[in-house]
Image (cartoon, rainbow, N blue to C red; front, side, top):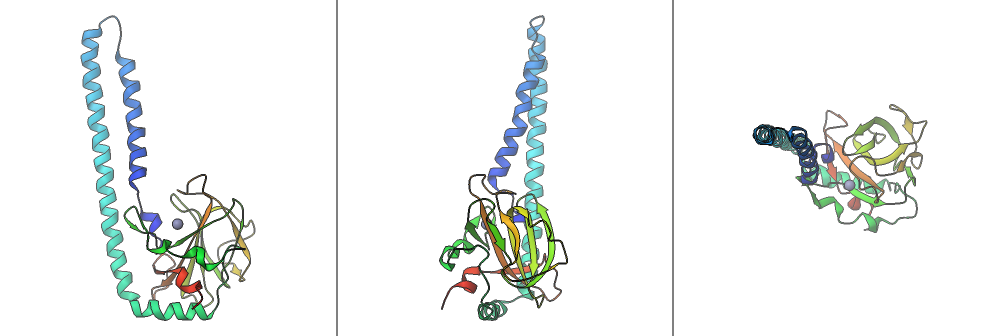
Length: 239
Ligand SMILES: [Zn+2]
């Protein structure tokens, strides 16, 4: 499941608070005049107080919205868990292992995928692996399949959702610097085909280009945005 789309980190909230605070300082300067400093300083206090209250209300509204999104997200997660139980996860790992998926970046070993799936980022688990690589390193399709969606999201940046040949699994590639220029939604792609390039789009740190890769099992309705993530390391590691 692509949790990054719904994940509003504390860091984001802090930067928003910083943005909100800045205009208050400008406002105070605008109101102070040498002619009637006393009266105006009162006006200034009042208006800055108003602005502060407004800013606080805005932050509270954002926090409420965030909490509501989390509840929605948890609800959807529960639904997906019911539709794709643990036994399905285990059998899928075996199925995908037998297909010997290609690694998306050349020159890496499965060992680099270890551990980051279960990491907690913000309010949710990462449920993906991050593969560090220089900017513009080619990203290869890990299996034959179809480009289900090319989607630019706030957190994931330039992303690709690719399904496998059976349409049962979704491979998600995020933070791309860009797409391979010829690919488009609905295209059939081949294992190893270059589909994009490593970058820092979305919320990836500017100095840490990496590919965010997830592998998910779709629910029986087969909607690319509704799926349960499995640990790519479990799929790639040698027994
Ligand atoms: Zn990631």
